[in-house]
Length: 308
Length: 260
Image (tube, rainbow over all chains, first blue to last red):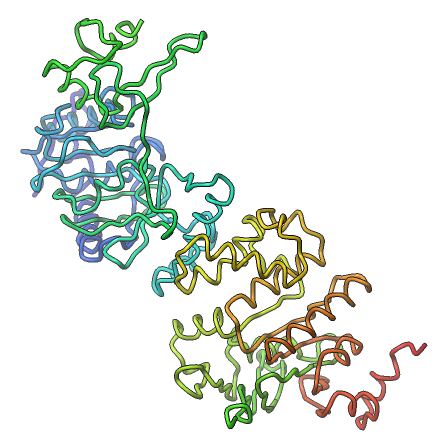
């Protein structure tokens, strides 16, 4: 399917739909099919240079470009927020090169590209979640050699993963890994869930939506098909736990969402707000109020003011 | 007790060539449970090549290495699948390197170093792993308050003892040692040898120990193989070989030790 998108710059060549050429997208889709067929397995792919630096989500952007169609609605989040630089630039990128509809509402999106967070709202079967992954190899910090880690995956030699957790407990008294918390996928492959907080690990288990992971610099793709078993690694006497907060969201009063700490001044004042901006906004529209909410009009620019 | 008399390890016509150069040639021997075999010879005589080939780290050009496994009976280690071989190497076998940094994980604590093999075979109870690691620390004479310290804060002798504990935690039956007392001073060497001798005796370990130090060989090994230019030139009981050497090279080797 050749489809071009008009480049607004005069005289410049038009974009192919979603920036990447069709052959590249086909190559990425093949890798994606393999990844879906072997949940948790890292499939190498010929990652392309994208018009953004590594670390800005080049892997996720390539995966999104390969799966997006003209009728899709895209949502992009960075640390849970729709309005940070990374999220805005990627959303604009696809609005321009694929001319797809974009949204900030989780429920309205058909494709959600994310860095770090899984939306609080439960995802559906007709949605795809695309993760931007910096380091796909969970064993990397223990075993620097790629040939060795591949062999360990092939032979299911995962004892070393627990050495890291053991170290955590012996140093901190509990498993202190809070993000990129290793998981066992479908009782076979140990997978790094990208730098998502471990708060989101349970959401990966048995999720209705398709989850795709793209690592641009490392040129790896992996995936979790819908309703895949994902188990966080732990010890029998130190079971897996997610973070909890004593405070609730200052804006919407939520106690069940992942909270970010916001420093308000140099007097030690602080507040907590939902990291998922869409979830927070929706709750406020429904009339929920947190202690720092002063009924100002909503919007990220006003959030700081509202807190004062 | 027929099991005791069956060899644990049988090496047959083992030859390792590096292109045209001989690493080791036509080596055959048997090793029984609880037996300690010393391999001595000068640098470049093929000791380490032989050890690597026996211990499944380097496939020999020719020859067979058969091991009496716990479950499957006698198996040729180079005919096993890689998964089986690697499992064997980290459960029933152990490897003590000359340089403890090669055998230890320097960026995790002593406890995690000892516990690694346990976790590799599926132990998932933190408390058990930790108490097991602690008791092994005691067995190799390291104070238990060092359990959470990094090996890099240990002295050379302690690192070597930690490496031994880390290897023995899964109760292996066969231990390979490559110059285990290498970079240690004389008093630390003596202490380590004493410890090793005790452990070998208590745990009924079969050991193949490569060394150029005849004193170490005399103290630890029951039998001795002398190598020169890749070949075994003399093989016998340790006392016999050292006190009544037959081959001119062995005579030279024995007489080169300073007598007091």
